[in-house]
Image (cartoon, rainbow, N blue to C red; front, side, top):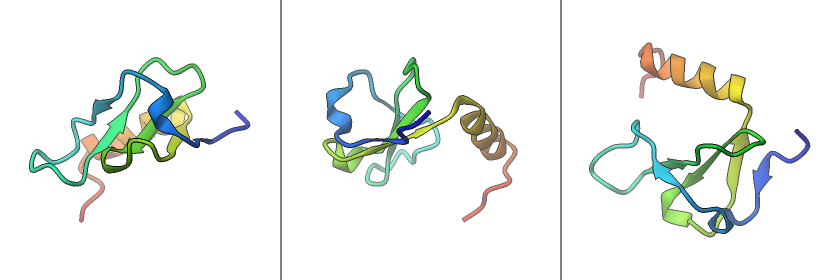
Length: 73
C-alpha cells in the first residue's frame, strides 16, 4: 500500500461509528468497511478531513488489543 491517507474522507460513503466510541457524542471515530486497500478511519467531527488507512493485519491487532483491555486511559 503506497497511500496511507485519504485527503478528503467525505468522498467515500458508508462510514459507521466505531463501537468503541463513547455514547456521549463528541469524540467519535468512524470506520469504513469493505475498502480494498485497508481500513479507513476518520474523526466524525471532521468528515471532510483526512482518513488514515490501516492494513487489515494492523487493524486486527488493534481491535484484539482493545477487546483484551490492554489499552487504558
